[in-house]
Image (cartoon, rainbow, N blue to C red):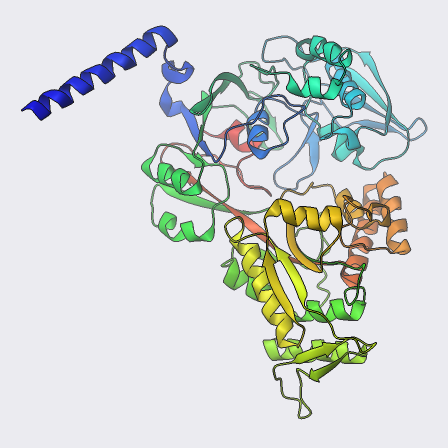
Length: 573
């Protein structure tokens, strides 16, 4: 009996505390909405900032992408650029090197009209402060004119192909919200830091949702924006809402916690790709559906071309012959990936080079070793024990020597640690074993991602490394940046040290090519050169597998990068 009275008293105290908190703080903003019309989304982390200029983390951008909109977006099927805040396609004038953009009639979430002044202001802030996230896409814009309330004209300093694909896809901000903040920052000693440090409590945007409440550590609630310009419109064949009352974002910290919440029905969507280990259990849950889509990503093996033997093309080709991408895809990634044979992912069909360079595709282990042995032997390499003996049998190779007779030292393969990315860590171990079979001494070396990045990009002290770009732009200009000799410097994009004047010429021409068909031909030829010279070897493109509950909402839209996109959130019912 005393125990029962104690428990009853504790319950009473808790109820009183809850009532007290609600009395003074009030219920959450979403408490009055119909919870069956609110989509609950699980995140691993909460946003670091709602300041659009500073936001560079995935979690901030997942939230801000529902609030701020660009002039043009990608249609989910073909991935072609289509007008969004813009009313129609931009008008290009070659004589003046200018683009004229007409805005559709749209309003900010505070009800005021979106104007050309807002667009011009956005560009001017980026240029004045050299905003790191956006400046490279705006630095070549010479002048911005506002012709009337809804018409803007951009003048370029030089032809730049990325103007349409990157400049015009920059999120637009409201001048009224930011003008005073910008002026104060400009007058300060450190303008960019002052701008970054400005705390935005409630961003004014043009997206389908607007921030209503953020309780740090608990939840973030976005309510439907009654002024969203797309409401009731059909764009690119998609009927737009939003047809729900809002979005609630909840932080879970670990995939285990988020997946458990999904199975219990506490959230409707976990906005992050899950590892293959979760899939068998989730497939058996009738209330959950798994969406699998390609990422705009590339995971690869990088060579250091600044030192032997990696500066020898024959050595790189032999290594490429030994690496079994199909094994990586089937056994390590359990089928949730695509083999990569070019530096642009297959899902980006407009730019992807579908030709297989033939580095061992379809060959078994012994055939790969024989071919690699032949390539190295023709290049003057010798062994204490060759991996193919006098009778043509494959044996364990040992003691490889370079053409000059020097012993090839143990090769270090840098990878992220298994607790950060088990897939890349295991890939490094398998590459180690495949190289050793051909008598090439190798050892995978896991290290923290920060230390690895410092070693590869800053110090340039490495042999091989397994890294990846998990969120590549759909415009292929990154191919130029990754391999142009201009970027072969500490902290430059060209980590492998690749230098080829023929590639540089094609890369420069592609950057200035305003004809898309001609540019596609140039970019495909750039990919052929890279696959011929192998400064790095593309390995795989992991698929993004996202779990959702199907007992409350329908209408998810699949595209490259997954279902967490504006088309889904505007169309879910």
